[in-house]
Length: 312
Image 1: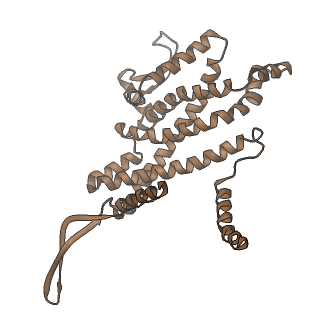
Image 2 (image 1 turned 45 degrees about the vertical axis):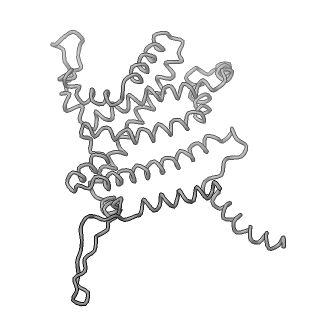
Image 3 (image 1 turned 60 degrees about the vertical axis):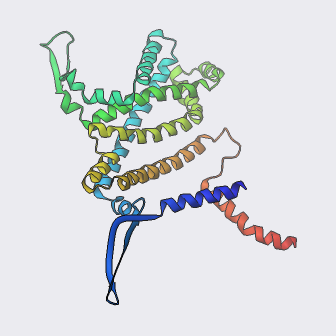
């Protein structure tokens, strides 16, 4: 019963995705000297327009920009987040307090607001200078804020610093998942705290850190879409520009969705193999890869009829 309902729902979904509707226009032609007119039908979701723009030059440039901003933001987020996690776990009240304040602020304010602040940072600071504090005479280096925080850099800073706050909690949770006895054992062998974290604690914590970190990467990829508000030429920006000139809003939105789904699928596959790598030593038998599972399913499907004939 349940499988039948599921098949009906799937059939309805396929029908609505690939159905055609009247466009409101008509076309006429002569048949044996008689003028015959009929309505012109078009794809409901404009698939012909979608596939004509999916590899458009501007769309591909938007994909490259989205990937670049995502990669740089996650690099900043992971690096700074790991430092914040170690600071948060420190016995030094000053270091743990700074890490807590950082996390409190960046998790407590919307990333969209942070993006706008970094983009408009020139309102607060027209120039960034390096020199002696409280002295305007001793300035060694100076740069204009607008030239420093371009659209791309503002987006990377905003997303990277925001991600650091979230990843610090993920990393802290992974570090806390490791028994304290291992740190004590490392110290008894003469290792410093930093060496113990690097060679013993962090490699084991990666098994706990990787799954939520993969989710953060995928989430960051989609979060970059809000940077269209400051003019970042990413996927959303390019598809919106094309939609504004062609008036094909829904097909261009579908084009953007296809690219986001494609990239997230690739990232999900990569996350699976990274998790599988760090599962070594924790599991006696590693989980089969998707290709191995497919081979098993095909082998069972091929052998099932043979077994049925043998049983007869």
